[in-house]
Length: 213
Image (cartoon, rainbow, N blue to C red; front, top):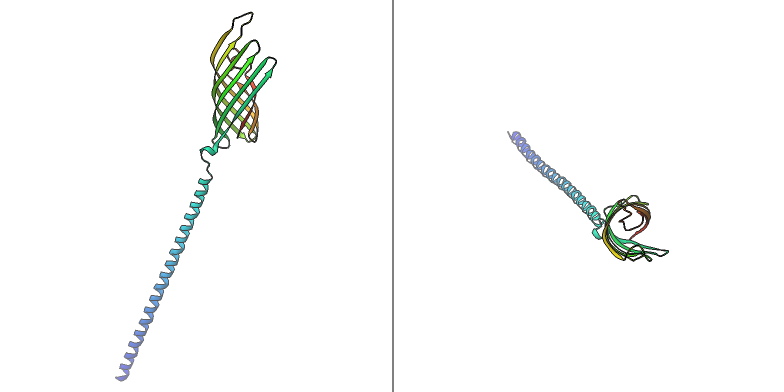
């Protein structure tokens, strides 16, 4: 009987001890599981924050490198001077262009000029224009320019007619091409609306030098 009781007490003690060890093991496993979960969550969180920081940096980089309106604007134009035997042609043509991208630009311009032919006429010119520029490659520039100017001309009297004045609007559409190096383009253009009786110049074809800074 005593042996049975001792055996029962030993089994009870062993059971209690085993249960405590199992509880400790379970608690340890839970702690380890919590530690693993926490570490995994921390790694994921750090990864998300890193991606967010990189994306924000890239976004700021793109924004910083997008020029605003005035960074795309260039000012310039052209000057014209022609002097011959009894003939004078002086013109000032300031303009500004907006570079839509590296290939296409659009702009507006003003024109002021004075033309005279000795013993024949003197003419003052003023007006404006709209211009479009296309650079298929950096060295080549194609252009289209619609020009509207007011022409005030005074003709001197001669043996065939008396002195008189002629004031009118002149419309020209120039298509041109030129070679570009840096800020300077040298080329030629032609007025497809040229009318020898009404056009401002004696020829629809003319060279040009265009400069933008």
